[in-house]
Length: 251
Ligand SMILES: NC(=O)c1ccc[n+]([C@@H]2O[C@H](COP(=O)([O-])OP(=O)(O)OC[C@H]3O[C@@H](n4cnc5c(N)ncnc54)[C@H](O)[C@@H]3O)[C@@H](O)[C@H]2O)c1
Image 1 (cartoon, rainbow, N blue to C red):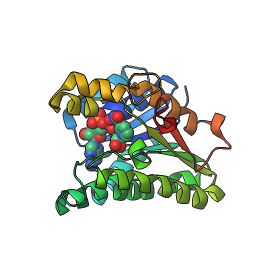
Image 2: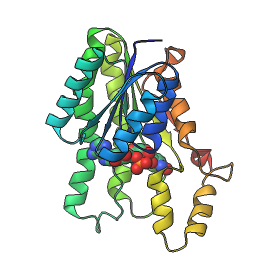
Image 3: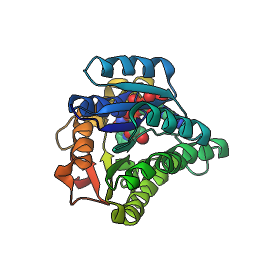
Image 4: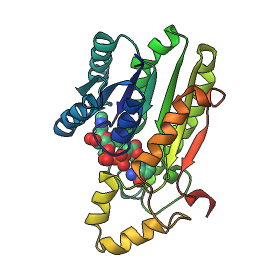
């Protein structure tokens, strides 16, 4: 059993939970960070049931004090940080003319400042031990445009750029930084917007058609790539954007 530690934001659901399970299966102890207390505690129990240790921190990644508290809890519990998965994100609909200022600011606070707070809290430990890996979660909508996602798409495009600058700056410390770029993935988030749409069956069909395989991806298919990028198998990979989009980007 390794004593390695993985920290994941948005770890209570969807891609973050799948990542926690993948790393736990490979012997990592896990810090789960999320604003959903009920699902977070359930996730903590699930991961503990897999034979590793886990701690859930009720934490909004856009709140500096809460992030610092989560880092302290991780330090007290595990004493180290090896992999950081910056995964929590907010999606707001609307064109630049429709998006309310509060929504714009809140989205950028979570999707980008959240990565800033989380990285400042957890990466110094990796720098001190001269080894670490960060994986950020971007989105195909940072590269392909759909209507009325001005804030979301622009924030996800910025995550790609941020990933590359982090990779450059942290390379001398042997900390690699990459991002995954998911297409349409069947998580509670996407399932919610499918069910809320006027014609859920049609919406699901359209989302499936955004892949050359004619289906949505699974959270596990993204988690597998996150795990690869964080592992020593990817020791010469940094600053990369890995598309896990079923081919959306080549269509
Ligand atoms: N599902 C997709 O098709 C898809 C596609 C591209 C990108 N993404 C990205 O993947 C990431 C995960 O999305 P998902 O589909 O797994 O959604 P999800 O809703 O299933 O999980 C997201 C989790 O993040 C948590 N969260 C939200 N805001 C938070 C905050 N401020 N602090 C801490 N936790 C917070 C939520 O409570 C939730 O548990 C997001 O960044 C999303 O933009 C998803």
